[in-house]
Image 1 (tube, rainbow, N blue to C red):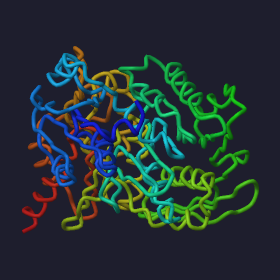
Image 2 (spheres, rainbow, N blue to C red):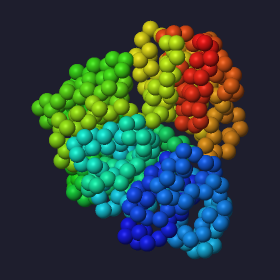
Image 3 (tube, rainbow, N blue to C red):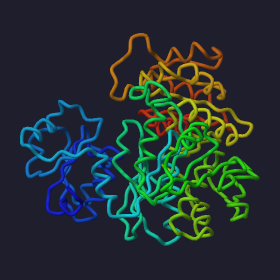
Image 4 (cartoon, rainbow, N blue to C red):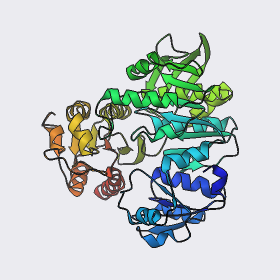
Length: 463
């Protein structure tokens, strides 16, 4: 099946409310393709798709497939899902989410943004920078761009930018013209038993880049260095970035303040410009240089790319300020790997100045907690006070003996508190917070739902 084949068919999405699935549905609707879909519960995402012309169902039922020709399904959908079973019984064409996205990318100069950390922000930065350069790319991202209020768009230009998730290996379907690899570490331990398995899937990803294409890679990451050392390809360009002098794009003269970051960027020994970000965090300077190098490889002017990066206001759930009440700031972040937690807390420490960082952390998946419990404890010790919710299981069954208590046992007991009740955590942090403090909701589950409740409770407290 190719992209043209879809134009005359009804496409049905099982799990259409998810970030990846909703983005693909949005782009198909913009192309005039008939779309229907379902999700377990209603949401603003489904409401938005309905407004664009999709038929969106709440709940999964075989009846939802009436009139459908093609079914798109994500790896998160159970094999026993009634709609998936109905599609098989009717012998409908069933396409994996990544394969559907690959179809949309197939006629464009496509760029896939991969890496253990930073994918969403880097993809968002590249998109905004290309937009500032007047190129109007199509894009599909795992999170919302704050300024755009959307995670997907069908552009008028010939570039397609997509976030490429390695978690289940599905990013091998994209076969992009260009790719970014921000870093490589062990994660998604439910799929990858060790770092060697992660390296192997990234090697396959590198091999999937089109001949004559390019790779932009961060050589400050040991995992990326190892990948490049074993790179057998001579038919693609490899553009490196980092603080090492041997990088093609060298980051130097880093300057970090609570709300922004600056760095000098040199390319092949020549200063190309000063990078100025209006969002905090050293890691974001690296993400921005990946976007800069990629945009330049696509032919966009460096100065316009730098202007676009300066205008970038962040992505949803990436150190996102949700509000401030009585001098107490509430920030939400998606970090769910020890490295991400440490980077986020270091950013929070700089952001809050003399105030305290009060973190509410919800571990994501039993398998990740089992492997990284001590690493999480070390990272969380960067906060002044830590409240741990019980593990958010995602699609996993519980593992006997694996609990958030494993993390607290390796932490300073004066600062680490296991509290499975969300209501009680809100009560405790609101009672404890003082002007100048930062309350951080942290994790990839539903911990973000606490941020508006905390803000409302702070307002009630201060009346």
